Length: 349
Image 1 (tube, rainbow, N blue to C red):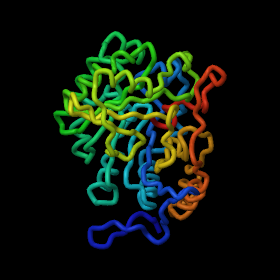
Image 2 (cartoon, one colour):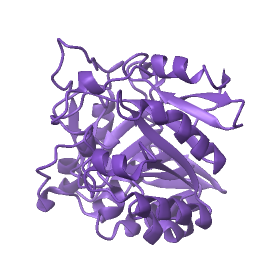
Image 3 (tube, one colour):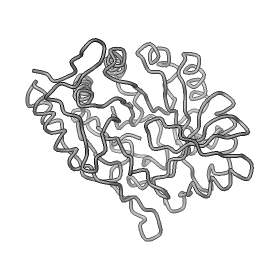
């Protein structure tokens, strides 16, 4: 018997054999981030090496298998799913998975289905994403300078991303821009990014660079503590802390001069682990209980062993018992190796 979701009236109910996921520190796991592919059509310098070796396609779960895994997590209490990559929209036939998960939003089993994208494929998919039930997306954008954009992404086309943002807003998708703060590259541009985002009704979140995967750059040269960035911003903006939350790790302020929201994701200077409700699933069926730890669980074996989900639920439960209290990220001159060897694109940004 598949243990998905039963219902009483219109209210989704956990089946008796699909207990909610509570980690050893009493945190309920209600948010699943799914990396549907490790492949990307950009090669952002802080994220990937220029000449990446990607997973063999034979190692990837099918989209049907990813849907079954997501459904198992929904049955066990996940209320929000974010599809990531790599670049999720380069996965062949990805809209099959988006549409299937969108049905769970429509049925009330899932509160929200969201997506993180580099924007390169948005012009093509924006209308269909909205039609499938996606209402909010994150777009990664580190600079408004087309030349610098090409430099940081290596392969990216700034005009194509702008076209994608236009299409997404026209389709009715709410957009939050994500910018990785990089010392000496875009730190002086954050005020312009802020005005651009808020001028178009978009939130902006700035993110500290994280020590994941071998890259050509020295992360100690790139690393910009957001405490410094905030102090710089406060010389020209009035920032007021607010309690707004989207379910992720960002802490938000309201910017008086623009009327918009600015988020800070600070895994290095002030980690966000104490309230972590997230786990990450890769396209090979590996579950990471923490972005910044190497411990992982193989769900693919349980998934393929039987069509019954009982074994899969047991494997998930065992994994959640190993969710750590927090990560071990650190960047300084004595720790210039990545905290974890895998690239962000493997786990999902």
